[in-house]
Length: 327
Image (cartoon, rainbow, N blue to C red; front, side, top):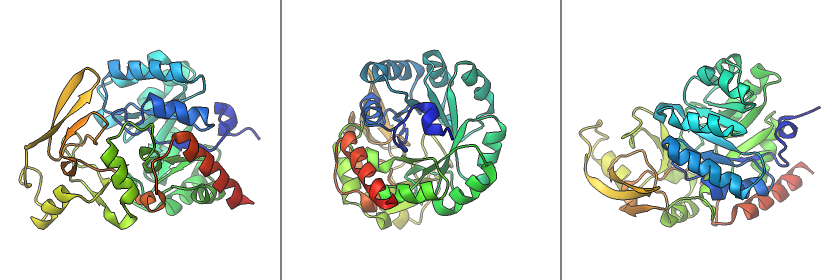
């Protein structure tokens, strides 16, 4: 039977999550694709001209199919327009209604994926005409729409969606975990935190080191880092900013310690962006400032991450672990 991997011409059931702001940039996307997985560009929160440039750079680095992730609450429309103009093979839409974009994407022969937080969410996306869904569990790092563990949401979603392919996300760091989600009916796994700790990820080096040193109990679900995207759950590694807020009694936005304090700058393309404490933007490689003031997005998968490695080595390791797990 022809599978989603066959349709997309992907060798391995491994995707990198499209970590926003270009953290999953052209270098990471191309490396994942060349190693046999599906690289997904982190186009979320970036203006259209930057997304266009990243798409062009990615195509210069690989001839393999790849995707681009759009975070709908942070989109001004120009990022989606850039993806449409480039006819990116796989369009991933997160945290919003995919329906307005499906028809136009399909006209361009684009494969449309909606990232969902539960079975009801997934059914709505399937009814809107998407080609596949990413099912997230609460173990995930970054912004988390899920309210239940992946094992629970995945099995329920596979059961109700029938032939619509499901990709699993949340707390996956090794091939044994990939084998588990494939056994539960997923056709692939999407890994975020594992690929943040890769050589190619466009993340601040000390942030990568924090992921390597962390354990799952160091992460926490919160809505603290909300400037730019309010009232959205996200999982981060505890840092001094979180601990000061916690010690202050977790006051509401506008009353938090150090509110509106400038904590650094970020070089984004040709521009420099001034950052405030509690901003949603993660520490990308162009960050200059206080790392302890930034959201250190990471999932429970930190338990299985012990090094910063090239993406090709990560995928080779995952493939070997997967083969051993299923044999």
